[in-house]
Length: 347
Ligand code: NAD
Ligand code: DAU
Image (tube, rainbow, N blue to C red; front, side, top):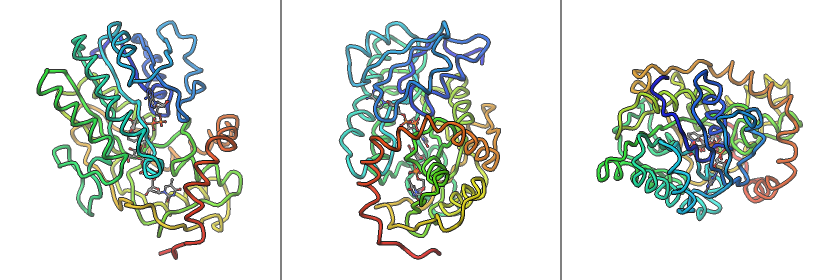
């Protein structure tokens, strides 16, 4: 990774994938300087960065990427921005889209503008495979496919991407974009399928499977995702997007639930079918050969990744127990209460 920029502003670095990326960067022998800018929303957590807190190359700034003045000041001290900051949960975007437009769209503009003014040598936008929308089997999405977002979340991520492409075409800002698939692993706020099901199962509580549980996703271990982002940062071509997926057969919700039951030793009766997510995309599947051609390849298959993940949540109750008894409860009641009692039969 000799070609990595030396002074990074990592927006959203206190979140799940951002913190894995920061730990990766600061663990390198020739570690770059890393400034994390994070608003510490419900999903941001300084505990995710505890292991690098004393690293001489690390600095944390609490703030909003929509704060143009703050962003411009910080951008003047670095040569590259990596943008993880976003509202990220599809179900929350269905309940409250507002913050998604503010952070994911306006916030990305604010960062791009600062990168333009300070003539950065790189801008990496962390995007998602959800920009492709629902993809029918057996097709795999490639980077030149048109965006077809279908949720407020994915539409906000497309809005961010479009600005990135425009800043590259208009102002020659050297932008690269990664489109990662559904990511799981340690330090994930317990609202997405894997950490939700794992923590529910550990407490012998029901795992709410949407609809028939047949919607499929490509599941990627968080450290593999972080390494993919680092590879594109170092070697990607400006103006291009790069898919980052595990590959192989995508897994459906029931398969994820069964894997959790197997690893936690809990009974199948914990699986509870609830009404489907509105506008639920049935399938995402990626062709990641463009990123693989840069030298990236995921190291962990799903079973090994899940073993590590379950072991981490088992031994880190201090991470998720306070969350699940706090803010999360309000969201859980809002999101799942209307669904309970409208169960769909298993397929
Ligand atoms: P996360 O929800 O765990 O973390 C998001 C972080 O952004 C938090 O630390 C939060 O405090 C911060 N943040 C939110 N709004 C902010 C603002 N206005 N200013 C500054 N900081 C703000 O998210 P994640 O799962 O780590 O995802 C990181 C990025 O990767 C996102 O851009 C997401 O769209 C993308 N992505 C996620 C996945 C996935 O499966 N989790 C897959 C592909 C792509
Ligand atoms: O694919 C990349 C995307 O993956 C990221 O861009 C998003 O930030 C991230 O949240 C994730 O989005 P998904 O909607 O795919 O993830 P989620 O874990 O919410 O859902 C995965 C699948 O599991 C989906 O088919 C819905 C289903 N599901 C999810 C939850 C939370 C359930 O059946 N029950 C649930 O309670």
